Every structure is written in structure tokens, then in C-alpha cells.
Image (cartoon, rainbow, N blue to C red):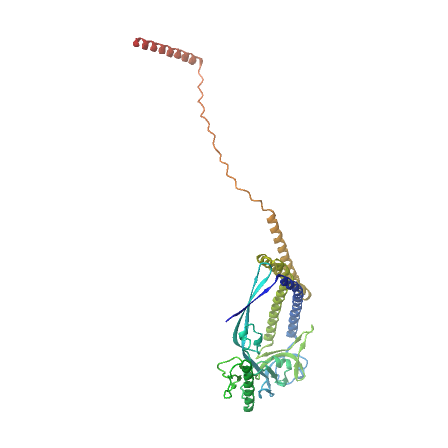
Amino acid sequence: MAYTEVTRTGYGTRLKNSLGGVLIGILMFIGGTILLWWNEGRAVKTSDMLKEGQKNYVEMENPAVKSPDMEGQLVHAVALATTTDSLSDGTFNVGAVAVKLHRTVEYYQWIEHEKTVKKDKIGGAQETTHTYTYSKEWTGSPVISGEFKDPDYQALNFVYQNLEDASSAAENVSFGAYRLNSSQVGSFHNEQPMAVTLDEDLTKQMDKAARDNARAFLTRGGLLDLVPDSAAIVHTQGNVVYIGRNPNVPEVGDVRITFTKDMPSKVSLIAKVIGDTFTYYKAKNGYKLDLLYMGENTAEEMFDSEHATNKMILWLLRILGVIIIIAGLRSIVSIVPTLLKVLPFLGGIVETGLGLVCGIIGLVWSLIVIAVAWLRYRPILGISLLVLAGLLIFWLIRRSRKKKAAKADIPEPQAPQAPEIQIPQYQQPSQPEQPQMTPEQQKEFEQWKQFQEFKKMQDQMNNQQNNQ
């Protein structure tokens, strides 16, 4: 069942923390810049060292025979790495003839997991909800349950026996007629399980110590004795020593010790011959070369692998440096959104905007640092990166100016006007013009009019006579 705890951070405390974050941000910004600068130089020098080694190495055809001609030479050789040294673990009195011996210890414990959710409140305060959950897991060190947040889990962890990891290595590892140096032995790895058989007296001593530890814990916890004298506590199976009641059903407090050994194997190396052993090759730039690979590998395969590793480390540290710089910038300006988080939505908007700006500025600054570093070590590539950073800055400035100009040119909105409707005006039809008459026609027309008037008078008289 999850345990929840809610804490509240006041506005004043948040402002105080933000002011402290400014100093931390400055340190992060400086540290990220130094990391980027150093990383570029490291990568270039490592690459130059490898290229120098590729030009100067010679093949050691027969490592089984010492050759005076090989003295002081950078050589590539392949041979069986073996030893006659016997290694032992003093705590468990076990050992083997091997190049290296390892003891790995694990504890079955309650583990606390925390999930945090933060919420800004009106007025500038912040409410943080901590949710704690617990699970039983194997871990590399004992867990102090007294520091758990949930009181129900604070007294549950204990261990039957507190042990530490341990390793030992052979001092004399032969490589044909030569010996491997300590750095090369450290790079050797050919782990195999090492069968363990414990002495009967040691088993009894460990069993008693484990039972006493368990009883002391159970007594402090007010619990019953769950480990009777008849129960076996120490178990051995293969390369594992298990301290607990049942290896197949792990319980809190159980301890698992695993033993492994590195056995002789064929290896490939690139190093400088000195007497009957090897040392590092020092390049002109001061960087050192001393390689050991497991199995049979050609010199070109080993150099190619080192070049690839160098590039991988270069990019990983570049990404890390950029992240540190951006995080530093965000920490420096964190005081601004904190001031505005009296209104959470306003502070959130400003925080998002500043985060974007810090990301762009951090990326540009990183490109400039990398370019200047490359200008120091690789002028052509450095100039190219500076040009790229300049173009990015130019694009950002131009984009900003375009936005400002676009805002300035936007006309004020006006109410839409109804379209004008053209109403056609009515025009009376014009009278047809009378045709012009000649004088003869005018005379005839007058005579016709007089005749019409005479006829009209005659008709009127006739009508009167008829009426009488």
C-alpha cells in the first residue's frame, strides 16, 4: 500500500531557493563550458595518438621467444595469457589458480521508491505530493529501513551477515615469453563460475553468527524466534553461498555471495616492450597507448575499435556538456518565473518561454565553444562550426525582426460596410420627332383641316334638325 506525504513550500522560501539556484546555475554554466572545451581537446589528442600508433607499431610474430629487436618497440601481439598463481578469499577460505578472483555480495531487502508531483498554488506557494511504495529486491548493499517514510516499514530490514565485494588478481600472468603488466591484467576478463566448498567448522561459525544476528533483530522488534537451532542458515550450491533459511524462497535479511574467476585465455595487445614485460607507448602529444583485448584481434581491428570508442565518448560528453549548460542557464533565470508564480498559469507560461530561449542560447553557446576549441586543434572544422553558429544567430535575429515588422504592419480592424446598390433611374421615352413638311404639303394639310371642321359643323346641324 502506498504511503503519501504532502509538503508545502512558501513563496518566500521558493524565492530564496531560486536565488541560490542562480549561483548554482553560474557554476553549471562554467562547468559545462569547461567540459566541452576539454572534451574536444581530449578527442583530438586521443585520435592523434591512435594515428601515431598505427604508423609506428610492428608485429611481434612469435611472443613465445624474446627478441632483442623488439625492445622499446610498440608491438602488436597475440598469445595465451596464463598464470600459476593461486588466489584465495580469506573470509570463506576458498580459492583457485586463476588470473582474477571475484566475490559479489547481494542482500534481499525492502526498497523504498519515491514518486514526486509538484503543483503551484495561487499566491506563489508550491505543494509537493510524495508517494512512497515498497518492494523486496536484491541489492548490492544493506538498506537502512529506519530512514523509510512509512512507519510500518521502518523496522523491517536486517541482514544475516554484512560482507563486502572483493577481488584479487595474479601478480604473474605470462604472455608467451613475456609478462602482462598490472594495467593489462586489470583489463583481462574471462569470468567463469568458481565452485565453492566451505569447511565444516567455518560453516558452523557462520551459521551461529547469522542466527545470533537474526535473534538480536527479532528481539529488538518484539517478534518471535523464527530461526530455531535446528534450522540451517548457511547453504552452498555451485558457486553461491546462501545465508538464509531457504535459498529457493528468499526472505528479507538473506545474503547471497557469488564467486567467479577469470581463467587463462588468448588475448591481443598493443603496447611497448620493456625487458620481459610491457609498458605504455607515449605519443608526441603526451597521451598514452596500452591496449589489451580478449581473443584474437588484428591491430587494425583494435585501432578501429578505439577510434569508434573515442567518437562515442566525444558525443556523449558533448551531449552532457550541452545539457549542463542549458540547465545552468535555466537555473540562472529561474528567479523570473518564480516571481510570477503568484499566478501559476502566468509563471508556467514564462517558464516555458524562458526554457525555450535558454535551450537556443545554450545550443548556440555550445557550438561556439566547440568551434573555438576546434579552431585551436582543427582550424578548418572550427571555422565551419563558427559559420554554422553565426548563421543560426543571424536566422534568430532575422526571425525576430520579421515578427516585429509583421505586428507593426497589421491594419486596425474595421466594421464591414454594405455594398452600394446602383438603382437605375427611370427615363420617360422620348416622343418621336415629327417629320418636316414641304410648303405644298403644308397647304394641303391646312385645306384638309378646314374640310374636317366644315364636315364636323354640317354633322352637328344635321343632328339638330333630326332632333327637332
